[in-house]
Figure 1 (cartoon, rainbow, N blue to C red):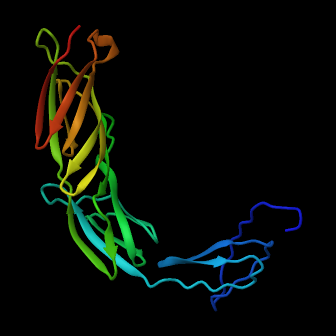
Figure 2 (tube, helix red, strand yellow; figure 1 turned 120 degrees about the vertical axis):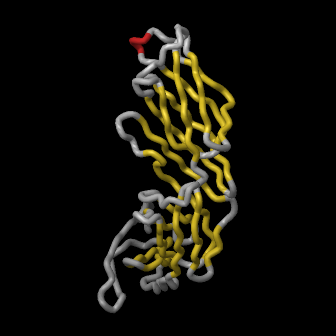
Figure 3 (cartoon, rainbow, N blue to C red; figure 1 turned 90 degrees about the horizontal axis):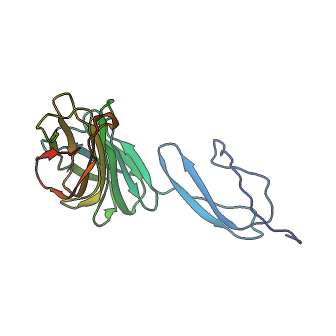
Length: 238
C-alpha cells in the first residue's frame, strides 16, 4: 500500500457461528482454517477483499496396522501421509494407526526405531512407499509389514580373542517390497564380543570401531547386502 511493502501474518479463532474478524493491511494471499479433528481448508484473499469464506473439506480416515516380519505389532512408529492435507499418527501398542485428512493423492512415509537406544545402541529407519496412496473415501490399508531382519556379529582380534566395547555402525540404503529409504544403526559389542541388532533389507558398508584403549584398528566392510537374517564374523587388526 502506498510506498510500502512487506508481509502480514495473523491468527484468529472463529466464534460459535464459525465467523472471525481481524485487523489487517491491504494484502493478498492464502488464508487457511483448521479445526480439531477436521482437515484444514484454505481460500485465496485478493487485494482489496474484506471478507472470505473458507470451506473445510469432508474428513476421511486412513487406518492400518504396522507389524514386523513375524507379524508382531510395532508401537511408537510414525506413519505420515503427505499431500493436500498432510497428517501423521503414531502407532498404538497394538500397531494400529488412524489418520484424518481430506480426499487426494498422498505419499506414505514411515519412520521409527526398530531398536530404541538402550545405552549400547539403536536402530532407526525412514522409508517411503513407491507410488502414491489415493484417498477418495475412508481407506483401510490393512497390515503394513516391515521386513525386519536380525544382524548378528562377532568381533575378534588377531589372536582370536573376543573384542568387547567395539562399535558396529552403518547408514545404508533400504529396499524391500514396495518401500525404499534408509536405515542407520549403532551397536556396541558385549563382553563376549558379540552384537545383535534389528535391521531392514539393505545394502551398504559396516564400520567396526574398537575402543581407543584396545590398540586395535578401525575396519570397514563394504558391500554388505542383507536380505535375510545375517551373521558377520570380523577380525580386527592391531
